[in-house]
Length: 480
Ligand SMILES: *Cc1c(COP(=O)(O)O)cnc(C)c1O
Image 1 (cartoon, helix red, strand yellow):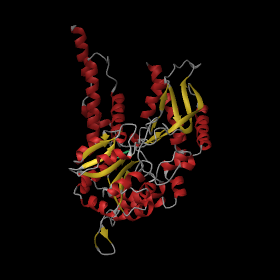
Image 2 (image 1 turned 180 degrees about the vertical axis):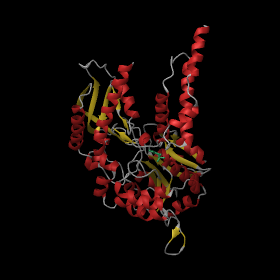
Image 3 (image 1 turned 90 degrees about the horizontal axis):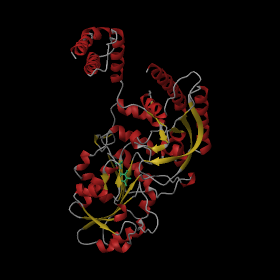
């Protein structure tokens, strides 16, 4: 009707001019940011008015406030810290491994100053960036040589491309794994130019299966850690020891993609024994590759260790230049590896290892601290300390259950004040908008916060975040 379209025009006419808004916003906000925030706000209001969703335009000072808030949101870094209350220790979406504090100092120095990255101070000439970690990797793993690239996916790619392009690689059908993020052994193999020669059955592969597949086109025998899945029941796989004997009889190298690749055995802490990198080398593998930021607890990197002649060939591959790691990664990796010289200290100070091995009583104490703080806030939620199970994550040890404690929140009774119920899903969403964001687990409409992955200093932050979120939600629920 004419009158309603008139009124829309009236509403639109009340939208302030851009210049008036800009003039009222704080000077410290860069002009371009103010501009885009105002534009976004005005556009939104205009389309809401046209859709009949707003009946009036708020006063100027209210709009200035909104635009300023939007602008400040845009000024925040996009990549920022979050609190991981999921209990998944190596959480790929949340940055995998936290770095040990003791290396921060070295990191800032390498970041802000020149370094001997590719300069041999002894000889006064060009050096190799890899030399900074090669020595310590050899020392820790017992390998003859080592090379580090961007991540383990890159390590697999360059290893196959170097040793087996145009030739066959023999792999068990039980090990053709897909890691999250579209990394699949058969696909990477195809990209490397190597030809996959799969042997055995999904659940059982025998030594004779490998033996029968070896022929004039074979370049490599390969084992792949199953990482994120497990085959149980009637199963058989061939050990590195047996397979290396076969490989060496045919003058072929044996390469294992270990996936997580740990340097210390966590068996004493109730974590199932996984062969360490050292043990895999000792058992006869000629090359091993593994991630820097899974169980190692370091930076994103792919580490290749093994026989010198093989690693040298990989080093000379032109692809290596495309996959090379940056100096901050190198500094971090060297710092973390140095800690591994004292394994007991590594378990205490490398956060990934520390979280995986934190005694249950300590996790319970953290849960009690959080519970107390939340309890004192008198929230409209039923609070409880519950037993839960943490996970290793990072596609490692899918069956490993690590006992843990969590605080759970369930929507409670309506308050005497008459505040309406707040659903846990609304609270969960609000916690993601908190600064820092708090990432929780949802189970049966309950919020579960597993304290194993929460750092001590984050406990008050969680309590404050929940307190503020509830206050905000109660206000907006009233307003509606
Ligand atoms: C995780 C994993 C990879 C990929 O490692 P990134 O460091 O994430 O690139 C490759 N192979 C296996 C077996 C893995 O578990």
